[in-house]
Length: 387
Image (cartoon, rainbow, N blue to C red; front, side, top):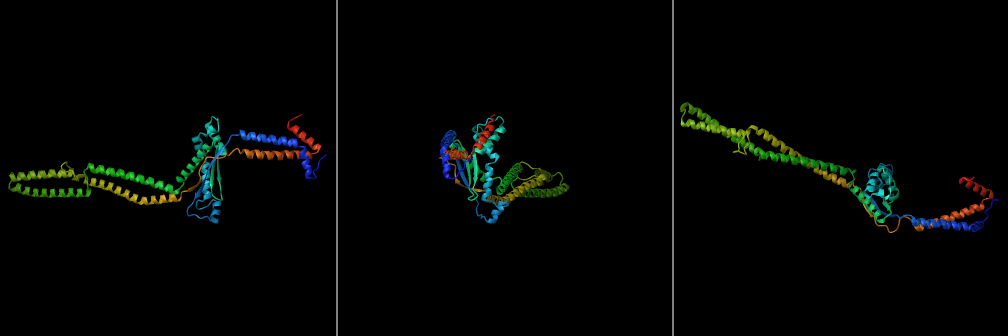
């Protein structure tokens, strides 16, 4: 016959009749909770908190709406936090951390296949060690690392903080940084080419005794012209002497002078050790052109550097302006209390849950009819596959 509950006292009567079950069940579950909290391995957390800073940026409602649709024109703290969170959780960063701290052995992974072992380690790392919390109201990002050793937790947390700060400084997606690197590489290339061209010019000048090409060319031509004038004068006088006094001493002297002048002119044309700084006239145009070509190249490189250097300074300013600035709110510290297990909380929670559950079972059994109890026994027998 089904029992009906007409007042709260009926419930108390049922609980009093089933007090033995309630006490035994509650104490048993509480004892299990105590044993579990003592046996389970302790875990310690260390975390840090950062805040993205944007200078001279005001956020309006329209900007927040645009940001929500992913079309914000400027980086916002919320967007920066999401980006940094994705970077910290990325496969590349996680694998580097696992290799650095040998976490495959820490997780006791015995898989022979290194790729499978790394996959398991990555999953366990994100499930057990790393947590990233984003606060949309304050724009704080908190990174928490939890391990079985408080010093190990702080070490990994400090590693992530250092990585995040380095990435912020050297963000490869910074447009200003990309322009700055491009301009620096171009300046280095131009400087190296100009140095090579200057060395070639210096060697060419030393090899051909060139000091000032224009002055040396002018001097060589003027010297050659004076000797040529003297040769023409001697030729005229020699022609006159041959007619009136052939084979005379005067004639012999004029012939010797003419031969000396001709030899000197040949030295002007082909060069001679006795005249090291007078350029040979037979290839003076080639030498002048070579020197002018090298000088023109050096001047061109200098003008290019004068044009590029201001752009480099602008790129450096743009790099700083586009840099994600992070303010460190909290740094990783040693944990004073365990992150897990919370023994008192586990025991108290288990006690109340088991007490409530046992009371509910007693009340439920008290209001069930004999037929319903028989059906419950049948269900239990079927579950155990009893015949």
